[in-house]
Image (cartoon, rainbow, N blue to C red; front, side):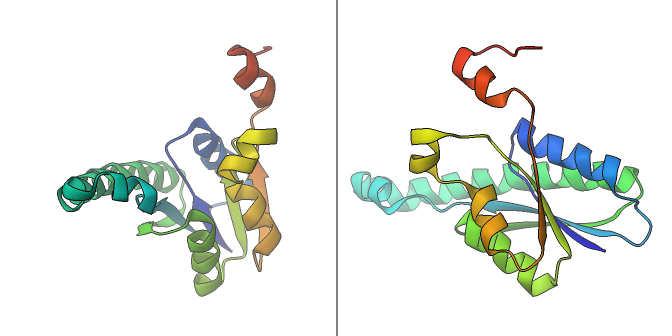
Amino acid sequence: MRILLPIDNSRFSQEATRALIRQVKPKGTSVRVLHVIAPIPAAFAIEMAPNVPFYSEEVEKDQRKQADKLVQGATQKLRNAGFATKGIVDMGDPKETILNHASDWNADLIILGSHGLKGLGKFLMGSVSEAVARHAGCSVQIVRIRGTEKQSKTGKSKR
């Protein structure tokens, strides 16, 4: 089985990693851990006009370093659980990049966390997990954390 695990630096991705380890047998399973770095928005870059080349290079270098560390940590956790893994850091639109990697690699399953955005937050930021679920050519498991919406509104968990 081929599983694509897109991650970001959130507790939702950590929960997706834990779910994969709990639910899937390592034998015969290959996991690709993917982190996508979204490019700096053009509107932001235009406002910083004279400083953009230097700033964007520095930001991209820092983002790449953090992404590599994040992916290495997740791949090591999966290897410790017995999975054959490969880590990938790519740049682009997260939704498109995840779908392209899943298609190019012929993934059987995509497991990813959901931030649980609702209403205006979902409208403004979009939902990567929802777009992936709608357009993927394979099965998709969206891992949620119970009580996320209530916690995000109140700042406290109901547990």
